[in-house]
Length: 149
Image 1 (tube, one colour):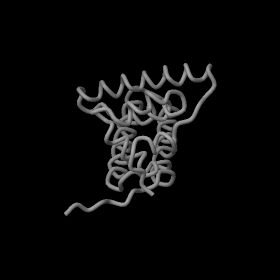
Image 2 (spheres, one colour):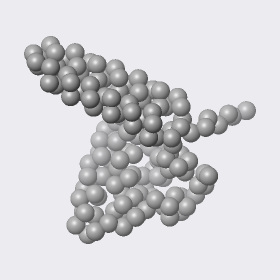
Image 3 (cartoon, helix red, strand yellow):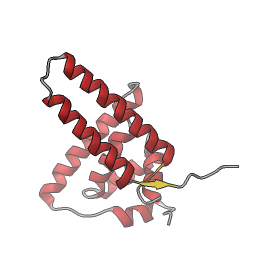
């Protein structure tokens, strides 16, 4: 079921947290937003990938900031689509995410090998890569592609 309005999304996903955690979540969410904004201008730096965890942190701490992440002009449409379809990704996006994670992980393995790591760093990177790909493939639902005529 697709949620069609900002109010429906906020009603479904916004939660309250304790006052102590609220400050922590808002601070961390703002840091992620700064990283997302950097991604608007720096080629290769992700934007929405930083905005998604920020939106989640705001959804459990500050309704006003959560609404802002879903409606701002830079990455709001992507976040709105993500939340309105039940936190799903289109199949082509999942494939690109997996490809980018794989490429960057293997570059990291190669660089740690060149740096002289005896193997512990490479094993750690490979384990994190496996967990990331597993999460994208099996834990994030795939959205049906909408065909525009």
